[in-house]
Image 1 (cartoon, rainbow, N blue to C red):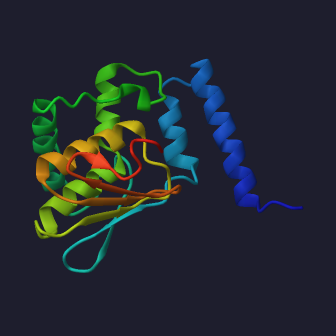
Image 2 (tube, rainbow, N blue to C red):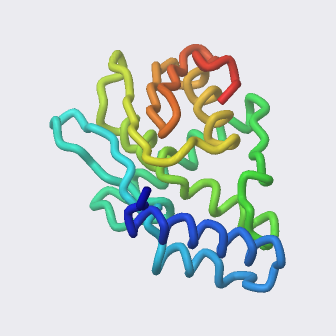
Length: 176
């Protein structure tokens, strides 16, 4: 049985990156490794009210409405913290300080896509986000809280399943 070259390269890159992170030898170079060479950086998307698919990458601020998206995300984060949300910093595997981990978490693509959805999708409509990677623990907790605070239904399809967030709970019963 032969494996496609991309799959082999992907597996190799995952193993190499994991070794770097665990040994802490790469330090801050690890995120750069992902940005330059990672096959995981495929866009995640959110459909706006105009029917157009909008793509977001983690940390990407090239969207024409980036400043509004960032402001909406900051407002939502403030509301969530008021309701008891605490970021799960262990969701960031890099050896960086807590402030940098928080910055990385707030730049996850599904959070950017959700904030864009809040700006563009009618308040009675469900916000749907499609990802090619598994949702991290922090984003899952964030979306549970966001569905409660905003009163919105959120559907996130990751590479494992559909997550239906409504009234502060997920259809997976926090087992993903």
